[in-house]
Amino acid sequence: MGRVISIVNQKGGVGKTTTAVNMAACLAVYGKSVLLVDVDPQANAVSGIGINKESIAVSIYDVLIKHEAVENVIMKTGIKNLDLLPSHADLSGAQVELVGVMAREMQLKNILEPLKEDYDYIIIDSPPSLGLLTINALVASQGLIIPIQCEYYALEGVAQLVHTFNLIKKNLNPQLYIQGILLTMFDKRINLAQQVVDDIRAYFKEKVYNTVIPRNVKLSEAPSFGLPIIFYDIKSAGATSYMQFVEEVLHHEKESVR
Image (cartoon, rainbow, N blue to C red; front, top):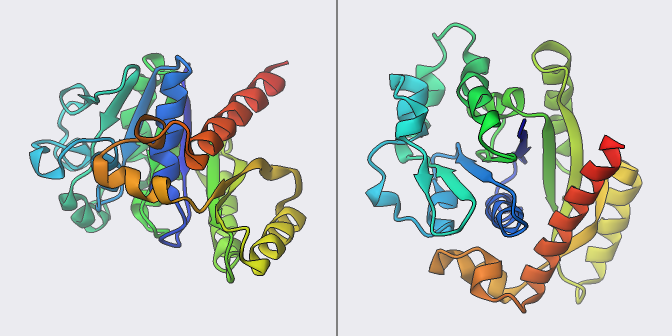
């Protein structure tokens, strides 16, 4: 049975989509079968994996709202072992359209549950908010990974996210747990950055991954070429760090199975 992992932070610009796309690609390179699910109406994971947003005829919106069969919407990417369940700008209306739906928080879970037979990992890129789409992502998941930018105010809003996580765990998804905190956009030239790292490690303790994702030019260029960093520049610091991060994820899972 595949594992469902959501990448969530209601702050924008913290490396959430970058993490979802590169985690999915690195897992695929490690030979895992992966489905990347984009539930952000901005659909940046779609373009980040090399698919033109304008070419999307049916999306997760059609599955959630119009009851389109999910098999008709999943797309092959150009990367072996990696499929995509794409988003679309229409999804921004789904927040409102789902309000009157029975068990509205469970809709994504119901869609993804049968797919766990087909994939080792289902990685969800969620919107930068704690709205209904993000709540659907958390209800559908076992693991939650929170990317946190190594900058001033990094922990601002995290308490609210943890509060939402606790409510969902208590009321809707008792299996949900914080799988890890990923430190992103670390710039060693900025004195404050190390202080932020120390603060986050003190706050979340062993939940923080050892790998820290650096601020890296190649990493910020890669999405505009529609390539995960390991296919854009395998020798870059960004590629090395995301491979190390995925190795950590896989190692932790092996340990927890013992």
